[in-house]
Image 1 (cartoon, rainbow, N blue to C red):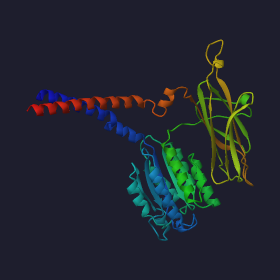
Image 2 (image 1 turned 45 degrees about the horizontal axis):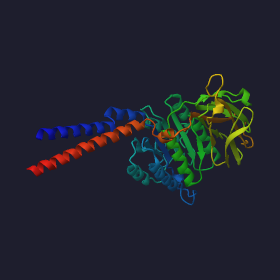
Image 3 (image 1 turned 180 degrees about the horizontal axis):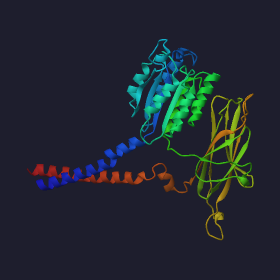
Image 4 (image 1 turned 60 degrees about the horizontal axis):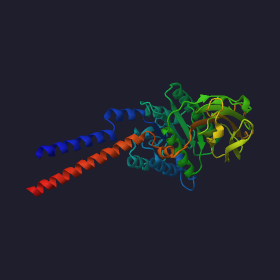
Length: 426
């Protein structure tokens, strides 16, 4: 009986070990996942001017702290995040010392939310605004790994440490080809600040946003951190046409183009019966524009009949305006091609139109950056497709875990009953 007990216990231990091996990755797998993890370095201006109380009745520093705490709560688990400061430690007047004042408040790595919030709570507006040196150090913070790398710079003033021009620093970072993007947020609607922060962002393909409210700051930083967690996709340059018949044929992917003020751009996509077209477009107002504008994305047939549309309006408070649409192409007996017995594809024309206008004295050429995402996927045509949406290949792992748990439960129950029976006989 003792031998049978040992055999049963051994089987249970083996199944438990197999289950643990399935549920938890090996050390090598964990290292590989860490190497591929997206990295974000939040670079915060803590110079003396952050004392100004002009953001919803509170100081700029208080608004930034509030935003950081909310961002830390919402940061995806897979993102390695760090916080770097500029102007946080030296309160004196010596320029040479003040222009070296940048430090890693929380190192880039797996996020401990409590430690990061505790570090943020210690900040107080102090010194200079060494944006250029801070960007150089932030680029070093993000070294290593193969995942996406993003710097998010929040400042309320221009760099005070020239001649190290932060625009030139950003261009030097971009020239290294390390795939690092710098996004900038300005807390003051100042023309010189906007120009400098826009120049920094444009050098690395990032974005500039002017924010005047705490909620806007939180939302924008959250968007940028979430964007770092998205799979890295290399956009393909394309050129839209003035009419659908001359438009480029696009497949699923990310595409970039330029669109002049008030212009229409056309693109074509083939959609088979039973498939769904998902498309979205973003137009970046990379220069001063007049308020009250919009962007329209239409899906129409080759004969000009509108199928569906998406539209969005703006009022000058953001640098990017986006909209999207979905078009499921249903299957029917009428779709069958009498010659081949296969359903023919439908050519859908996508039209992108904007109603932006340039502010006085602003150049209208080249056109504004346009980013178009096209995704043609199989539609949820039956119950099994709907049931598996979101899990994909994870079903086999879930089934295996359920089966393993069932077998372990049976063996454990049998072993327990056997031990009780032995105890009673004795």
